[in-house]
Image (cartoon, rainbow, N blue to C red; front, side, top):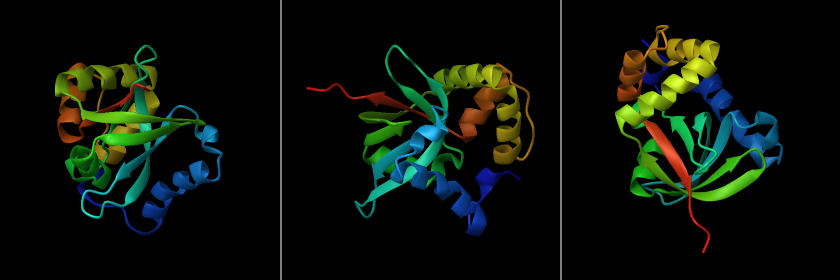
Length: 160
């Protein structure tokens, strides 16, 4: 059983929430481009919510960032962005308005395979934590991975 099967509680939840304070203390740049702060709107409350998510890809041409929902389709931020896809993204010390989009499994698998190739140790550990087993970085495994844990793209909105 992987981490994706249960919601974080106690110290684990604190550990996941701690990076938000890096951004609030204006030292988010310490996390580099491997993590982003997502500011989104609660689907039920309408309140501003924040979460820090690991970046699995960045398209320097379009400016898009790609992330995986580690808690699958039931993650609060994932459900929230489906109701209101207009979000704010902070990476390092840069913030921008973005549009969130749930990616197709095919496109997501390609990006995840690139991530697995560039960061094999991180991919192995991530698969062990999230899936409960270590998987090899093959296209087929990446496709199965994103079918359980969908990938989202954050495209910068054009400034008018």
